[in-house]
Length: 124
Image 1 (cartoon, rainbow, N blue to C red):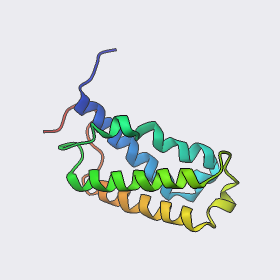
Image 2: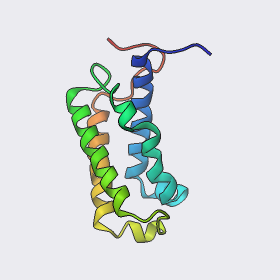
Image 3: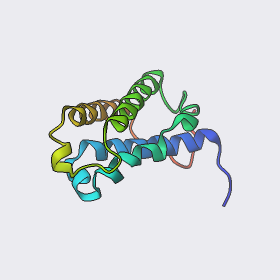
Image 4: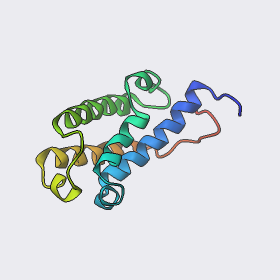
């Protein structure tokens, strides 16, 4: 397996972030995977270490700014929920979850303006 550039890695991670956001927007995904799995998917692709490579040209300034804002909201959400989350039917009735889902939808819509990026060829 050959190493890839940081830029190509960021492109692939951007695509995975879009997939997670799509899942956050879909109630069926939450019901299928369960709240614990769904909420933890975000940190598989976004954390303080990876955020440093989420820069132009892979992420626009607006995408990065909104990604950081969503990440802060996600962190707040995680801090306010129990370690073992209740069933999704209880979660989806909370204002905190509705806000998280609405912001995920907005961020996904922003990312969809450019769409998914190539996973084999670096953008310029």
